[in-house]
Length: 239
Image (cartoon, one colour):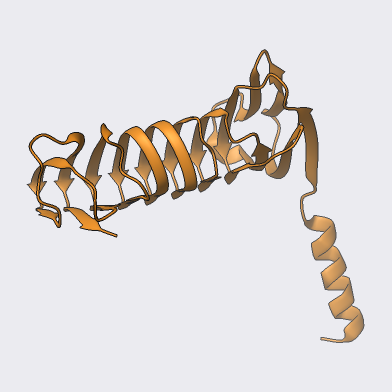
């Protein structure tokens, strides 16, 4: 390829690339974040400062696709959907920087999710795609994924994690004195990693799988781990 042809190809690629759009919002009074996305990637990061920033990139946006970004009451809403309900017609990447204290509700049809640094409550639903949650200090976590792996690193008091098909890896940098973790996996295995001094009481049910626990169960422990799998193992190990 000649230099001229290469330059033309590069320019054509740049022109074809979807443009990102950025919106900012004052953070005063914000308490919640709500994201609904038919298809695409979702990234949420904690940020300090007086403004929240939302960057969206329309990868595929045919007739019938809508994208709404705004504040309603104390909630920052980012909603990308197809009026006809056809997920394949609309694909939007969402990158949001928000105050770390916000409670977050994330719903995604297909695509990957990454959530970093939040400290409120987290509720997520992912149809197909991987989920990564890290550096968080959450009060509660409730989440469901259809297919894809789940990785959660940080601390929380109460968590209920459901995975249809895929593996779950949960690392708690500090185990709560009182709390619970409930992990359900249809097909796949779950690994829970805890500090060496954690006191825990565990239970596990599986159609085809085993429980491996590096801790000695404490009958009087007020932090419990319960697991259930159709096909798969639960491993509780020391960090």
